[in-house]
Picture 1 (cartoon, rainbow, N blue to C red):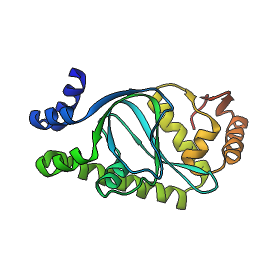
Picture 2: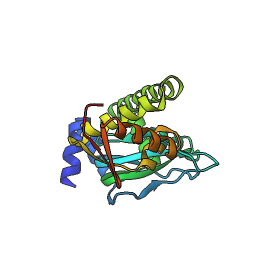
Picture 3: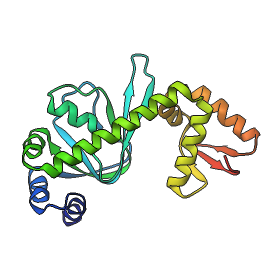
Picture 4: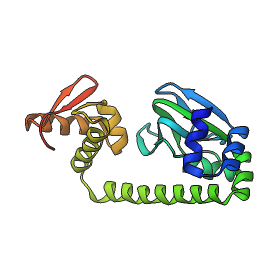
Length: 211
């Protein structure tokens, strides 16, 4: 709890707001690959991540998945906030991408605190602005960029985040994030392997030359 309090104080710089957030919410430690939000369900709590990462996904009727965005430490879920405050069902689902520590904020408590604390209101508005910009970039990518361009950008981002040339990811996970078929990703990775830029391993991709 002390770690969570220090983390929140660093973001909100308001002891009263932090104390009320902690008093009305619950902290949770969630293993990797666990669902924390179901598509089509009403939102009862909103996540706020301290450590780890959550990926927010959407699935169509055929079962095809696409990554909408990640929730990093110090962030919450814009879709959960919007659906929860408007008493609507979620249009996406969320899964922990790695072991994650988070605060589960009841939607009704969040509603009350948004009216009471301008700093929390600012945080939510900034979050929506950031997610809107990410959505624009995503639309640009799928509309104007080839899949091979987006695949390389994804691999570079993972390489930078991992600080390693060995990336732990499956072809299906990449396909979900890029909004394409696994076969397309596998074909493009095979081409990169023939160009001696990557080495495809089981559940991993090693970058062996600049992409």
